[in-house]
Length: 88
Image 1 (cartoon, rainbow, N blue to C red):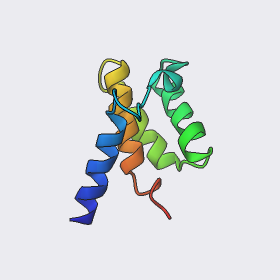
Image 2 (tube, rainbow, N blue to C red):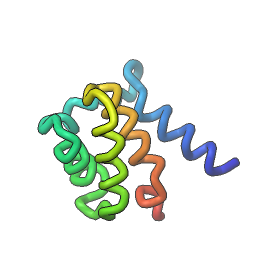
Image 3 (tube, one colour):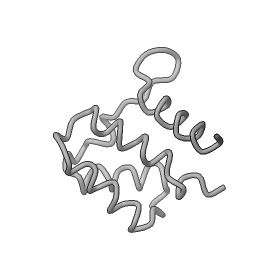
Image 4 (spheres, rainbow, N blue to C red):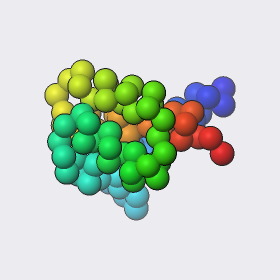
C-alpha cells in the first residue's frame, strides 16, 4: 500500500497544471532530446547524483514516444517515484 501511495503522489505532483503548485516541464526541455531532458532532471532534481541505471531508464522512456510536455511530465513522475529519489 505504501508503494502505491508513493507512486500516486509522484504522478499527482508531476501533473499539476493549475492551482497553487504548478509543475512546468519547460525548464527540463531546454535541450529537447532524451539525453538533454534526462540531464536536466538529473541536475535539477538529483543534484547530479542520479545513478546511470535510473538515467538510462528515463532516457529509454523519453525516446519511446513523441518528446513533448506530456512525455516530460510522465518522465518527471517516474523520476519522483524512483527508489533513487526516495533514498531518504
